Amino acid sequence: MTPAGLALIEATVERLQAALSEARAVDDRAAVARVQRDLRYWTDRRRTAEVVLPPSENDVVRFGSTVLLEHGDGTRARYQVVGEDEADPAAGKVSYVSPIARSLLGAAAGDVVALVNGEAEILEIR
Image (tube, one colour):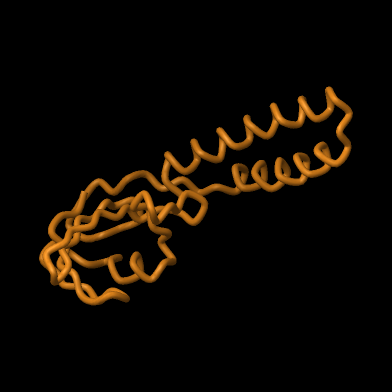
């Protein structure tokens, strides 16, 4: 995951720790059990997270790259290739295992890649 993805997990763990304290304060056993389950999951995700620093070179698309595409109709889209936990397609963050990312990984600026909705040219890699 990217450093930003790790920060999201850490924020989730902090939020869940606060929620657990609140649930215990009001003796809400169902909430305590639910929050403890979620906290175990996110704590384990944080423990096993493999942070990948942003690429130092922008010659090809790599994990962490941000890519500007131009579709055949002239519309443009920007995507960042990220880890599964931080994927948010509406915000342009696509998981490295998504079809879009799989088409982009290893491609260079100027390459035309096949996407589900047609082809697009890579204009820029950051």
